[in-house]
Image (cartoon, rainbow, N blue to C red; front, side, top):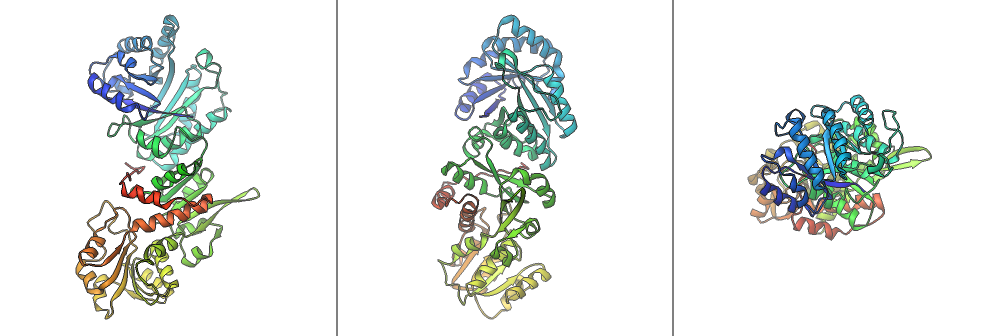
Length: 526
């Protein structure tokens, strides 16, 4: 299994010792970034109960101190004497790397060598693959290649490197893998491939599961590189040092920063002891995503704005999803040698299950704000239950068309709602208005909400982050009954999980996560 490495980037010995102590629970190995320290002390190597990588980068390599090569040679030599497990040297410092290899043999140190290359601007596939071959030719124990990702697809270069390393076949550049010599006891060369930057977080999660030697995770608020994920999430949520070649599931959407699905699904995977992981995919072009990532994933959650567009990428569609005209769940199927996607909609069951125990839907006047994928699920679900449907949407053509589908009434502006003589028994927000970070926004001003409802009305917000939206706060202030989007989210996620795994997960475990406020925001953009 791969390791989680926590970089120690403290500027002082005192703070470094504190960070080393804090890192023990989550780290399999530590990296001492001595170039961050004003007065680096190599004896810090002995203070860790975990193996230690020592790194001292010069400023031109992204380091934080202007040490000369002789100073770095001396510090590396002392670190080897102190028992460092690895010495990490940039490929641009090749003469230093060769000198330290000779010094290691002279002093008989057990340290192994990581030869690294960082590109802080882009991920150039041809350049990356060429460099891997060149770096391997100098016989390091581990090759580390890190490049800045400018798109989600840049991660594929690193994923392929990790898989290639795990298979022990030829490297992607065509060169045969060399043995690691005495230090590696004849085993294959190890590789640390990763993408830096916000778009590169996917590689930091999946590469260690696919064959990378390790991944880097930070202490809270102390990343040593852009896009680094906190080590606690890597260990406790994604289980990167426990899973090997897992089935990959994920959320496709834009944005995905407020999604809590990766927490819930990964928790359920762990509860069910499944070798599976769930990640976020921030997607700009849906066709490009399916072209590039379909071979890597087994199942997908679909969120805004792709719930309708995703239909074009399915070969088979569940009758309910076809009727609604939107999918939120995809499963990869195989027929002979052909693979294809089958689409489902679990939003309908999630929404109806959340509202039905609060109000009788048959004969109820139901106002739905929005006409997108979520609105279609709520609208068709309520129509099937016998509700009278009213649609309010900012796009007149889309809203009017949706209202006709449901034999309902279209109201073009929220201001026009007060003209309708009847009262609404149900008000359902199926837009993204009120979603974090715009938590103070509401799709329906309080004075209008008061006018169109009665004391037994139910206000249902499909937004679940935050759980308490401005709309629900206004409804409670008016004495109305409310239903949070968290309940719909949990119910639809439970159905997704069952479709993927044929296991029915414990929904109460999800509710406890919400109650404990364990949700953290993980987005590949920040």
